[in-house]
Length: 325
Image (cartoon, rainbow, N blue to C red; front, side, top):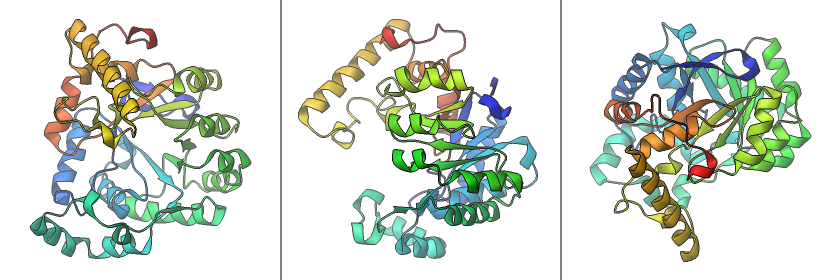
């Protein structure tokens, strides 16, 4: 696993990082299995772990905290703040040990839960909220500092106003965070973030079929020496599932969009076959060689899944370019 410098932070991070959105949660396996997954990632040379206070109602952070209790300085932990859990999910967090076996017995699925049970997630990027959120994350992670704090999917106008900058600078001065950045869902929010000198990293979606950041964001990352963190490199599973397993209606709405997406995926599969590599390998190659990307996040639920992804990581293949697929 090669190490790269994360922009102007100076942090040395593994080229692949573990995305921890699905670590924990009442619909997942026992926490010991997640601890084994985290240990497997570390044994494979991964030192960058990307989580958020909202992931699995805070359990993702807590599991990372337990896993790195004796080796905190050997890893780079990035977390996020800005989303607020509804009361229903806060309750679930408290009764999770009791709820897990009941859910397993009944065979309940996350996507089948009624909206009233899930509740509505809101956002708050006020200075007071961000300071309190960081303190809560530090408690769950059992650490006195975050290597990186990221705003979690703020709207472009919130990013542009910069009301949050003073709070994050204050957290840096107190040593509670070493660096801060923004995790964005749109190009507009990304461009707004890059206008603030204090922003040291930018996280964004990037894959063979999600290239919106390429022409506008990536060159600016390089020019400003901002560390790029690519997520959803497998497009939410579209680039790892077979045609038979994939339900495109989960990703795009209209029949026309689904047809266009199917053609794009077919083109990617054809190039992978032409190169004699798997589509997973092609997707990793694209993300790892994208201009300005310091670390590409991968997600896995088991050590076996992680091992399969790492086995597909390209070694010396020619980089996949924008024009080649």
